[in-house]
Structure formats: structure tokens, C-alpha cells
Length: 408
Ligand code: PMT
Image: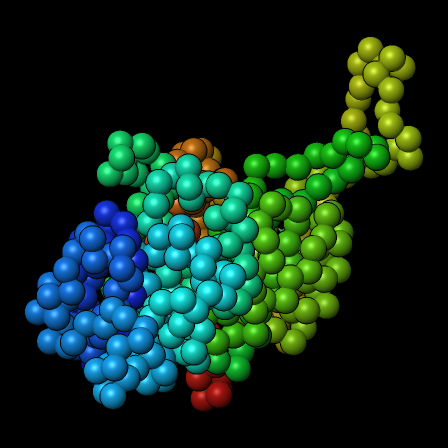
């Protein structure tokens, strides 16, 4: 059961076929106890009428920037100050562009400039428009400014295309709003997350690595940040941008990841090892490119890399240490072995033989394994899963700390 009792949500609706779903969103937010005021752009009104939102929210719907009636009652500055959260759903490509460039030529863009509340957007557009470099750039500008981007979802679109661009379902957006208002369960805590692959060089142009994209680790870093933690992300090479509000340290090799992990984990409360560290590195790194003309066959000698998460867990004092287990068979058995062999507090186990989850996918399904057993977390978006995992980890840390302070 989620509750948004008395939360003041300014719902911005822009023009797009998903505008009709904003009516259901307004209804769900109201059902959870929120006060919802709706601002519509001109093009939103070609898809759905203000009257629909007025009936659903019990509030006057705002449509014009320069409205003498509204200015006497609730003009753009008052609306901007009133909101606990400005939520724009659906957010069209045009709206994202105007928000990114600081336009103030209608009520919605103007109050977005004027508000000190957090702004969240739920993009909805054709998949090619979502993938377009201009939209990608606008989203990274908005994310860097602290604007929350919820979605979009992947699936069949109104135009018949299939891909990323659908607005998240109203129930999912309502859940995001509820998560947003959750108390900061990691306030005052420091969390270190490792993410992505490592690269172990063979020569100046070649390396050994794996399929990790960093998505799972980055999602955990963002979820820990959103839960109020100071987050240090130690990332192997990925194509993901540094998450805003997270201190990101870029490394290449396992040895570099180890050095930064040991250094930062010393003062951390939680250490989460989501990185897919390459287990073996070449014994020798050739200073020059290995020439294929010189070798009909090439034998590589490899040495075992240091085990980073085990080294962190061996420190005294140590943070709450979370390892991952990426397995292709006997998932829980291997996860339990890792738990005890590496002396971890919990292991998050995922089946990487399934290509729809795990490596390089947007989704994952995991088990949390601890000394008492295991709990399943069903397949979901990595961002959503990370939130659930972070909440679980925060609860366990609190239990461990209160046990320690009681002296048992
Ligand atoms: O990055 P994505 O594309 O989103 O994919 C996510 C993921 C599959 C990489 C992630 O969910 C995951 O499972 N990460 C751990 C991958 C891994 O290397 O698992 P492992 O079972 O080989 O290692 C067990 C644990 O020891 C892991 O926490 C790992 O970070 C750690 N380890 C392993 C080797 C090593 N030398 N040092 C380590 O710290």
C-alpha cells in the first residue's frame, strides 16, 4: 500500500497520444491521497480536455500563462511555489527540448523555470524520436540538472513501431512518485558501488574483458543516491554517463579497481560489488602491438586477479559488504559458496545464462542470499529493482548496527 497523503503534485500534460493516460495517472495519484493540480499545454488540449482533469482532480485546470483570472488566484509563480513535485506526463520530445533550453513561453515551461521543487518527466514519443541524438542530448542535459527521467517503457507504440518511447504505465509512474517521497533511508551513509567490466590489457590495442554494461551497478548507485547516501561509483569502462550527484571514479583494470575500492571502503557504510571483474589478467603486457605475422599460434599465460570484494570484506572495520554472483548453472549453490568463501554479508545472485536479463540488459531478476536462506526478486527494470535492493540493504545495515550497539 503506497500513500501520498497531502502531497502536492503539479501534473503537467503535454501533447501526445499518451495524454489520455495522464487522466488515469491523475486518478491514481488522487486515490493515494495526493492533491493534484493540472497544467496543460495547448497541444495537450487537442488530445484531451481540461474538463476531464477538473472532474478527476476536483481542481481548476491551468492552461494559460497570462490569464487575468489565474493571476488573481493561482498564477505561475504561486503554482511553482505550491508544488512538492512537478511531474510532466506525458513529456513530449518538444517539451523536453524546451525544458532543456530554458524556454518560458507557456505556463508549463515558465513554472518549471520558476519552481524550486524537483521536476520529474515521463517521456512519451516515437522510438526514433527517443533515439535521436538531439533527444539524447536534451535528456542528458536535464539529468545533469537533477531532473528525474522516469521511463520510457519499451513496447508497441500507437504508430505501430516497436521500441523505447512509450510512456510508463500510470501505475508505474504512481509508484515512482511514491518512491520519490519515501524517507531517505540512507541519509548520512556512504555507499561505494563497483560497476561495469574491467579490461586487462594484452598489448596497447587488445584486452580481455566481458559483456558487463554497467547498467546494474549504475542503477544501484542512483538508487543509493536517491535514498540520501553519499555515493562513490567505481566504474570500469562503460558507455554510460556519470550519474549526476554521484562521485564517479573511472578505472580500467582490476588492480586499479582494487586500489580505489580499498581506499574508499575504509570510510564506507556499504560496499556493493556489482562489477564483473575479469578473473584472470595476462602475465605480461606487450609494450608494442603483438604482430600476427610473428605468431601462427599464440599461447597466453594468465594470472589470477585480486578478489576485490573479498579484500574489502577482510578489512577491519569493514562496511556492510554486498557481493554479486553471476552464474550460468546451480545459481543458489554457487551464490551460497561465494557468501561464505568471500565472507560477505549478502550475495545478490543472477542467472547470466538468460540473455533477457543480467549482462547488458535493461532488466534483471535476482535472489538475495544470506546466512539464513534466500529471497527471490522477480524480473523487472534494473532501475526499479535497484530501488528495492537498496531498501533491503538499508534495512539489513540498520539491523546489523542496532545489534552491534546492543553488544550481540
Ligand atoms: O553490468 P550489466 O550489463 O548491467 O550486468 C550486470 C551484471 C550481470 C554484471 C551484475 O548483475 C553482476 O552479476 N555482477 C557481478 C559479476 C561477477 O563478476 O560475478 P562473479 O560471480 O564472477 O563474482 C562474484 C563477486 O565477486 C561479484 O560481486 C564480483 O564483483 C566480485 N569479484 C569477482 C572477481 C574479482 N576478482 N573481484 C571481485 O570483487
